[in-house]
Amino acid sequence: MEEQKKTIPEVMLTGDRPTGRLHIGHYVGSLRERVALQNQGGFDELYIMIADTQALTDNAGNIQKVRDNVIEVALDYLSCGIDPNKVTIFLQSRVPELFEFTCYFMDLVTYARLIRNPTVKSELGMRAFGDSIPTGFLTYPISQAADILAFGTTIVPAGEDQMPMVEQAQEIAHKFNSTYKEVFVEPKIMLPKNESCRRLPGTDGKAKMSKSLGNCIYLSDDAKTVDKKVMSMFTDPTHLRPEDPGHTEGNPVFQYLEAFATPEHFKTYDTGFASLEEMEEKYRQGGLGDVAVKRFLSFVLNDVLDPIRKKRHELEKDLPAVYAILEEGSKKAEAKARSFALRARRAMGIDYFENTKFIEKQQKAYKRAHEQAEAYEAYLAKQKH
Image 1: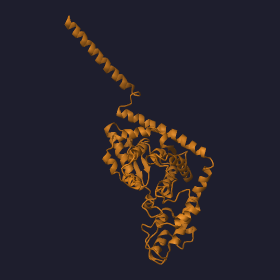
Image 2 (image 1 turned 90 degrees about the horizontal axis):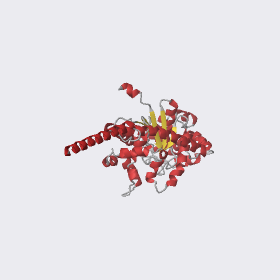
Image 3 (image 1 turned 60 degrees about the vertical axis):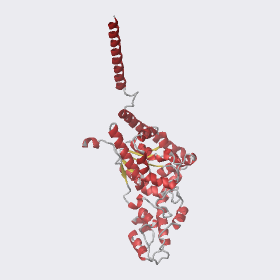
């Protein structure tokens, strides 16, 4: 059994909905880790999916928004350092097997289990559908499980909010394997090592940075926009004057610094502190104003984003080349998913055309039945005479 486990390819899959440009929460929560993983070379295959079909679950009446943002997300991937020679970047809508798996998996999950999913509950609360919840939105954990399982994924790098989704994929893989035959791998989530990166708050202090809430700093924001957003950030409401003692815990400005600031930043920019720990301690004691801390954060973020912006500007000069990368990746992804679809159909016993032995077996059964019927008719005819 141990030897069999070792032969399972190490496959990474993750992705994003193209409902807007990607922001720094995506970067520290997953994107930065994806680049590191591709460069470490510890995986046999790496896939990144642009989930355009899933984006339609709550944008069915605004397809142009999804169409326009496919290229935005692709540009963000490439500008952050995702290498299409190492990673297969593909469009969800161009892999029909994903919808086939979604259909099969729907029969393995109850309605009660779906509505218990914490991520679904949270998303439904944010969108306030009322009684008009699109079925596709409610069932998107099943669709997401199909996305993960269709490629034999072993690792899903994602933020903390995606844990319930990966757990759902594990359950579905287990249910399918025990109901039919073993086909799917039960994936595991890979969370960011830095806890501050797991769920970066919004600039307004809300629990999560979200495109739909408009509280983001985007990877493509220019330096001036970043400065403006940082200077208007929510901080500690009790820290009214620089001399007042402040709170760093739950303070978005310090959470961002924990996620992005490095020792080199403290050497490069004259803050008067040798480390983030020293800065935090001074803020807690009193004597350090929010403006000074925000100014430093702005320097740090622009330092991180500047090479990303420059690469993006170069990529924007040749969009057909970016679409060619997506097309090639989608073909490659479809071929991989197709192989899993054949295995799944075989396990379920619905591989009608591919399973010639099954057809031959049925043919023999019919032939035997006909022979028995003919023999019985001959027997009855004999009895009459």
